[in-house]
Length: 242
Length: 70
Image (cartoon, rainbow over all chains, first blue to last red):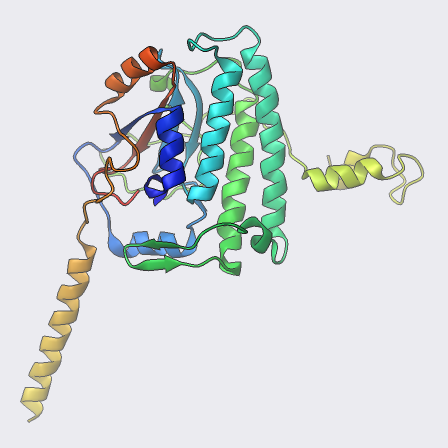
């Protein structure tokens, strides 16, 4: 769906060299009713382990990946993040910058927080309206997706995954090779079309998993007087169990 | 009369099943290589990345990009 979008195609062609690979060589399944159901219920974001888009240096090091399928509007943001990471980590000749990893860590941390804010917005009643503002309706094989309150779950699941993904990337000490990560990556849900004899996807071992607090809540807590507040505690983070 | 109505019902049911099966067939994606330009392989993409200074975007899926509606 996303690669048919004009803006997505322009960004991919301008910023990246594109390739695709079938994890089940020779296998294809475009089962109509399953796909139509995904378009209907999970159009904005569907962080399935079935699909993963990797971003690699010419040496084959993976500097970013995102599992799942996304609406063009969200996938454009993912591509922009990949492009920002490319310039943060590498020079014009794709040589790793000395402080690239440290700066990429900061970028990942800020993205983790920003996506967590969007996750919180998706959980708010009618939050889907502001989140899908500017999102186009879509047609896929005769099924038209129109944004509505039923998009809230998809948006929440997608932003929750993207926040956790960036939090995980922010803990990485080195960039993995494609072989190290192609069957072991973080994903949001277990839906797969893989056959029984496929190489299955495993989750990576997470060394640290920072707990995230929505920026809005953080700001409210920071603005609250630190002593003598209604909770009678000194640390604002204690108020919400952190 | 009853027999012919039953036969018509069975035929209508068979037609509906055939239509559903037809709709379930994979449809080749007419947009392949019309928007995004895909290299033939990861190796070719990595080689081009080294020449251009652009990173590689590798889309891994269970399926065939030429048939999927991506």
